[in-house]
Amino acid sequence: MKNNAIQSIPYTAPPKGRSIQTLLALVSISRLRTAVQACFALFCIFVGYRFYCFYLWTLDRSETYVNRPPSVEAFLPISALLGLKRLALTGQWDPVHPAGLTIFLAALAIAFLFRKGFCGWICPVGFVSNLLEKTGKPFRFSDQLPAWLDYVFLCLKYLLLAFFIYIILLQMDLRSVEAFLRSPYNLVADAKMLVFFLQPSTLTIAVLGFLVLISFVIRNFWCRYLCPYGALLGLLAIFSPVTVKRKASNCIDCKKCETICPASIKVARNDTVRHAECIGCMECVEVCPQEDCLSLSLPGKKQTPIYIMPIAIVGLFGLFYMVAVFSGHWQSTIPLATAKPLYQAAETFAHP
Image (cartoon, rainbow, N blue to C red; front, side, top):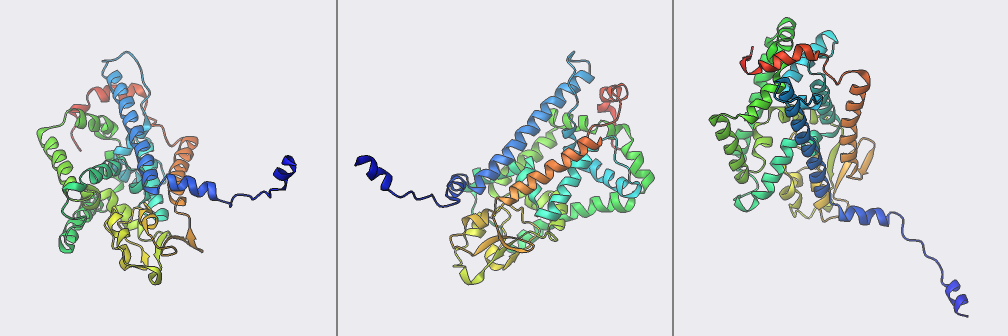
């Protein structure tokens, strides 16, 4: 009788997707973004350490040879921009810092397709900026500057971008670009960058200290107001097919989306968020308390799961890396016999 009673209890299958929903509820998009950024930041630290070991070997201060990590070229955006111009004019990939050009192109592609996703999910400087933003919350009088002052500060990074575009894209011809890319300075630009951080001048320490302190008071100061790289990605992001849609009839004007937005975008005042400062973090969509109010929108689809964004952004970045590796556009082709004496004399090379 007991067994029959047990067998008579009908089996009810759990609702489909319940386990996935429970998992996503435990891992918020904000925590996921922090975790992804932290992984990239830790990888950058590892790459920096490996390059430091390689640099010591070139100076004959270490007997242990360590392969030069190509990823260190991510911190050479000027060289990458020049390499991009050379690629556009000649169709030839930069043989000196090929990984830097690959990473730069990946960031541009991500911006065009998935907003400033490189800034929001990959950039290690953005990760540090996020940490300072969260740490400095108790010290801020407001999450956003007055509108007039915000516009004035926003102009700064676009002026810096305009300066680089004018000098590199308009003033430098192909001969000048190739002369720079082949110059001893550019060949050891990674070592120059390393020395810059290992032996900072008083001015460098003062500037970095100022940026850290002001980031406690003004939200994401570097990323929002000074980064020309971010300005370029923002201009491309305007044309991105990925947007955040707002259904005005369901909005209760709670402003939670605007409070949490790292880019201080007035989300609640727009039906479609196509702002140049949007970093594709999706935190505004997640925090919205109203069902079917804010949603991620892709072409042909009204609503898309917000976790598609980090998958697409990191996936596209990884795709560029794999294509570069398998096509031979990742490792520098400069022979060690040529590079080693240049690294030994790196501190004597001035900017051409």
